[in-house]
Length: 276
Length: 307
Picture (tube, chains in turn green, red):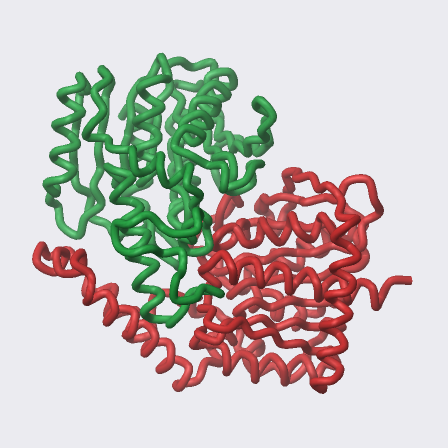
């Protein structure tokens, strides 16, 4: 059982109802962390490890807040209205809730996969940020969309035809925009607003100064950092961040269909947000 | 059940659905907490606003999932059914999602306990005397387990529910392995696969476990054997809806087993196959078909039993 108080609630924010889950340490609050999840099916696989990480962080005196973006999980709204901007807006709103509830400023941001990119964008605008932890970040939205289309294509090769779609389906040719407006990604509708804003998202092209502590964790089969993550680290250093990049040997949990148990990743997150 | 009766029931369901669409009500979501074996289970209640509830619905997620289900399908079902006047409870089983408990300490047995606790909570705390179960994948097994243990419900919708793994036949395991093998074969056409191969990032251990039948839906050693051997349910359902995709390798065996089990128990059994759908219904069209078919069935059942 977790040695922290957990409060789950809906918070009304400008006509939206955000689902938020708060993990409050039993003793004094020494730091505060906001968790940014990925979206689509990756959200499901990453969900529980973030709960475990937030509980571990609370044991170390860090108050954490997790939340569901508008149009995802239990929050109100339609996924058809989702864009990168709405994801960042929800993150900033959740950060404000965390600051009010914890009394701590600045707060630390934690993001996994696309949530890491969102955390980084939010950190540029958050005002007081203690640090950012990026776990297996998605460096560009274009890459994310490309992988989504590939994954759908592979699944279609296996199951012959996706649900109800004919030959001229919504997939589109490789690197071509999908026909019909909405791209069906594993049962999640990706509307043009999200698709276009993802296509414009490229962390390597961001130039705003970010003078905070940033740690990038690459989940890898071996203790070796890939070229793309090294490049991201260099870009962040050029933006004034104090960067640490490291590989953590673990399975690619964000695509796992089964139960996800990754204590080493949870410990790494808890250690970062607690300032260990 | 004969084809004639099924067809009549389908038509009846559609008529009820069309009538209800005009009078659909607003639904509100509230947080939910109850205690199961000393640990807090957390979730969401979808409540219809401004009307007396028709009945309660427990939405049961799968083995590695959360209360939203794959592609948020349990959320969609909760919203849809609450709009028709059903109070819907979605919750994370212990050791999953937001609920308490360690991930590795919980299995199908504890999930069944949680479902029975949720039914008790719905009855005692929310005053819901009539209950339906909706379970996806292992959530369907949980529904069957709860009924085996004595839970009596008005209806149960099983979406892609496998038979208990202790009961799985060699042929089923072979079909699943063949399905995964096709998946990996298709991946050979991807440039990314070859990049991973060259850079040593292919996880052969994971592939081996999947192909040899382990990993993906391994549910622990403690699975109760009597669930697999069950000839009768101590509880049960008046009506059962089975929904499976035709591209789901576990479908045929499960359809045979569950049809026989529930017909022996005296339930009306309806089967809906979704052409081309895989195990998780991973497409928006399949997602909608599952939810709408379930809503039509539940409305028809509620109309049959309404005073």
